[in-house]
Length: 295
Image (cartoon, rainbow, N blue to C red; front, side):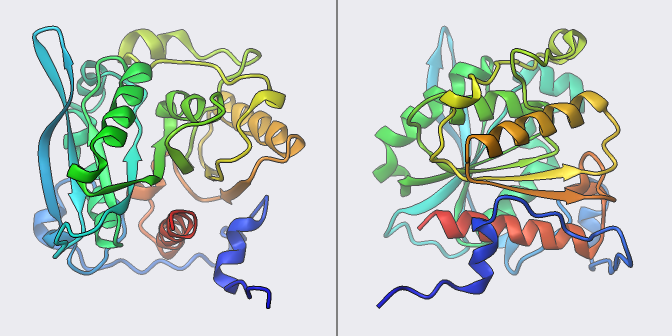
């Protein structure tokens, strides 16, 4: 007897989703403890977020006279008796550049810490890490996870990615340029997609240390990694918009498994700037997407 698909899950099998988010947008602010009002956080909450288990400063790579470390967030009350899926937040900018940009490493930024807590509270692990050479460090990180999955209690057959903004080129080329990699699915918020035709602005490279690898020719892209992409409608950078639409058209022409949501009122950084029900719906859909593809 054929399996009956849960209607909620069918949304992730579509190629394009343009949600009518611009009209009658409902805003209902959640109660946020005063201790969290001082720093930006992802505008979504789950029960027991503050009870997640965090293992910090796990060395994943030795470099010269130093080391690179990662932090892993596990669900509340997790007993480490079985391996669980994990989401890696993939960075395209060096630690030094991150400090120039926000005054801290991304792994210590309140926004990414809160995202990790959300992911962990939903039942998956979340991984954030140090990096001095983003393109190569994500390869080293995933190799370490693969080799140590038992010790880390991570199911290395069910790894998802999250990336955003100018971090996207490193993540998306690692995922789509190789015929195989550790990632089973990926989420991109307000991303930039680089090709040979679309050159990245050089000042971004030099000031903040973002690396800018290009995607392969469309016909050579990996067609086995589902993507969930959210376009911020208020992102007025014409370069970013053109790069996304160019990538999307190529992806559709090559029949890649892509879900695209257009968020008309979304800012670049909507997940921590647009405090409304639409943002929370997108974040919930993000979690559902990961859970659907990470068995």
